[in-house]
Image 1: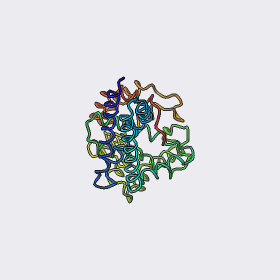
Image 2 (image 1 turned 30 degrees about the vertical axis):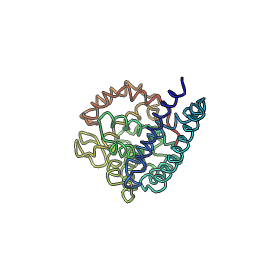
Image 3 (image 1 turned 180 degrees about the vertical axis):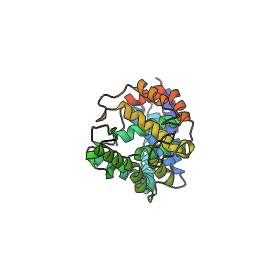
Image 4 (image 1 turned 90 degrees about the vertical axis):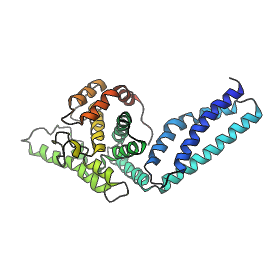
Length: 294
């Protein structure tokens, strides 16, 4: 490819990066919810291309164009690193999210992979519902923290391989009640923090059912926080497609989606199920994609 065409291709990449850096630098507050969304865009759209772009720039034979391209790359790298450091250092929301996520991943037997997958699926559903960037970012943050209450639940409970579906088995019912407390505990942990009331409410309500049969408050239909309804679907999809103690054989993705659609109007908001129906291929692709490193 001629040097000038290479350079124009690089220029398109530079413009994309510059717009993301501008988004970071324009945040009215470092705790702005858009911060997490912009950081995600940098991680997903920019970082995987960076080494290849540098290699292409170094391959430009015209010395003047090559030096101009490399100088621009170095300046953008410095701007990215500076803005990311600023947001991550001073954002109370992101700092709290990282600290709590660290606790989840380092709790005995918890890897945090479930939280990452639920976040990924929630993001896809939110995008297909045409939610704005700020709402999508907040939903993803809530999804990442939805099980934070489990840090206070004994491993002997959440690692139990029994189904707890025998109402006459006192041990089963006691474990079931203890496990169900994780939603309330999670909301309690988050409420006094700077994470936000809406996120804490979504964490509390992520096991509520559309028909009012869920827990902890037996909320129904639109009284359930909207973000919690999306997390409910994403959480269920991951639960069905992963091996669990009481269900060692996971469901195939297409069958799990059928289960979700069959539950609309019962466990799940019909509007969110409609979005799931339109993004089936994206959910299946996300299931197969590797998780980002924490």
